[in-house]
Length: 136
Image (cartoon, rainbow, N blue to C red; front, side, top):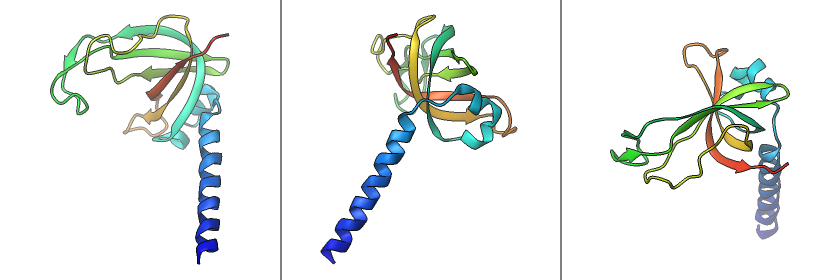
């Protein structure tokens, strides 16, 4: 029985590592834009240059912060050779806890694709889970 469990565990971990590796590979933004329903609620990684940055005012009421203030929430567009997609960040519960995104910065963003609920083929955007600065 022990060799069987070991084999199943190795197989499971092997697939997990393949999935993790695939999730870290950059996906062209244009693929998401062409078929948003295929990526809806999926975690993707995209890379590109930041355009149209806006920082939202301090506001109250997210689940993560209880009903306390939320700081440094941003929305911006990320552009690669294949297209441009909107990105939103969650912000933080304390001021100045995150490094704000700036215009023309090169980023790798990992996040969940969100598609307008009433129109599954509608506009896609990504709710960022992690943002990495990429030096070129």
